[in-house]
Length: 382
Image (cartoon, rainbow, N blue to C red; front, side, top):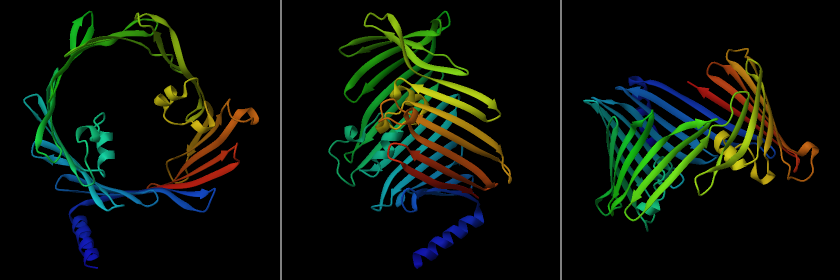
């Protein structure tokens, strides 16, 4: 009871000092089984003393994550911070603090990350990719900590980055990077250069010439890298494809002799707008993985889907805003025989009910297993 009262007093005090805002969104699965919560996110925020403070709780359907973010200015420095918790344990997971300052045309950034194994691993490897926790601090067990300090200074065209690491054994130098960008070579061609050291010593110096068009939409560039015991030359060819009503995705094919031998087509899209926000879209993927890197994960691998036909509609809502409907039919050439190779139907709708509330209804039907899905979603802002 004391905790509840203290929390209520804290909220009321904050509300008296600040402008409170927030949102509550979620989705309920109505079919194929009993009603179940798929996901819900509650976000509360307020502004006090020039700082925007936000708390976000996520349920999928159990209480899976809790984080707080702070953004604002402290004197001449811009400050942002995020702190995460794992409520399933429960346990503190991580804190990530960033401060930026501009002085005499020099942009200075300082970052400090503190995380607890293994609750903070997911956030760290997502934000600090390609760094891996297990590589930086091997052999850690539950509740061991990692701290990464990043110091960056940049003034065009130079950027210097230095990082220090602490795996519960004291702060040690981790790496140093010197980068120069958009250096002029000749004829409008520019290149980038970088020098990289780690605690083990010199690693490489790299020169990268930006892509410039040769002809017919084909661009050429080159990476030249000198390591402690190696040299690597990597020509780069790229084909931008064809865009507008018809979009073609692909790239050039080159051999070890650095010559172009052809084109590799990933897929194509035909998009025809019939009226304002009313359209027909067709996508054919020859290389599903390559196409999904461009348009996102839309195909289901287990059904070997590689095509879809989408119809989009919209119109004015009765209570303001615009309602939208997207109806999509997915196809596969490899699945057991179905009519026209159809694998599933998906209809997604969103309707604003009022300025602060919108509802969505998603209907799906899987042809091979004859299963129907239905989900009701909402977003409420205040």
